[in-house]
Length: 134
Image (cartoon, rainbow, N blue to C red; front, side, top):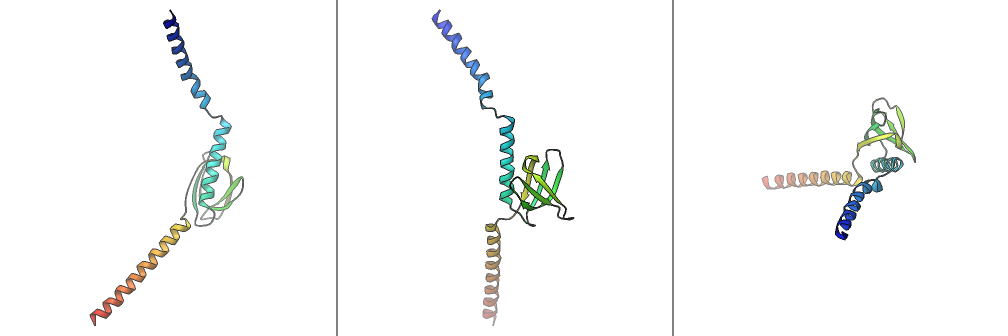
């Protein structure tokens, strides 16, 4: 009798843990929204501002914006259209997702150094060719 009651108790507690665990780990709507805002804010800050910062933004009302980041503020950022220059101020909470591209300073330095090294090797090769052909 004791074993039967113990097994029923263990089965019941396992079933309860299956149903109770998802609700314990679930985030509230406010927590999800705060996490989304923080993610968008971090990605826009990482991109930076300037005409070379291209961005594509889709808002929660399905509006799509394409342009570059003109200005980054505490609770919003400003996207300027590349063709018309029209500015749109967007609150971080209104963004469904934002994708952008911008070369980092390190990438620009690497490209510049690569071009410089290539040009130097080309000049050296041309000088050596001229010296040994004469």
